[in-house]
Length: 223
Image (tube, rainbow, N blue to C red; front, side):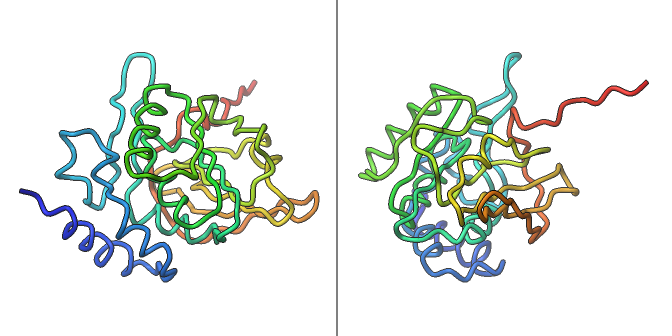
C-alpha cells in the first residue's frame, strides 16, 4: 500500500521548502491537496516525483498535456502573491490540481481548459474533494475567460512564446499574470503587472516546463 501522505510530505520538504517557497499558505495547501487524485491511475505512484506528468497523451490531433512539476508550480503561485479575496483565472489547469491549490489561497478560481475530457475530470475530482470555489469552463486557452474578468491573478500552466494581449486585458488594475516565457533552458518565470493602462514585466527565476499548446509564436517570414 502506497503511503501518499508520506510521499506528499516528502515532496513538500524536498522540492518545495528547499526551493525558496516560504509562503506557509502554499506549503499548507500542497500538504493538504492529494496530488495523486489529479493524475491518471497508472501514474499515481509517480504523483510526487520532481517532474512534469502527462495527464493527456499526445494524439495526431493534439500534443500531450502535463501537470507541472511541484516546485515550479509552487514558485509560480508564490510569485503571483495570491490574496484571500482574490479572483484568480487558471489557464490550462488540466485535471484541476493547480486550481485546487489556488482555491485554498483565494476567494474564487475560474479554470479554463480547451479539452472537454480534462474539464470533466477536474470537475469530478474537485467535487469529490469538496472544493466548491472553483468554476471550470471549456474554451480557447489564449482567450482566457472574459465573462468573469477582470482578475486579480492569472496563472498560465505551461511555458509560452508570447503572452496573448487578450489575457493581459483581463487583469485588474494591480493584477498579476504569471507564466514561464521561453522554451527549455531559455525559459524564465515572469510576472506581468498592470498599473492603469501600463503592463510591466519582471523576470524572476529560470524554469523549463512544457509549452502550453496555443501559445506558440507565429512563424516569421523573411524575404
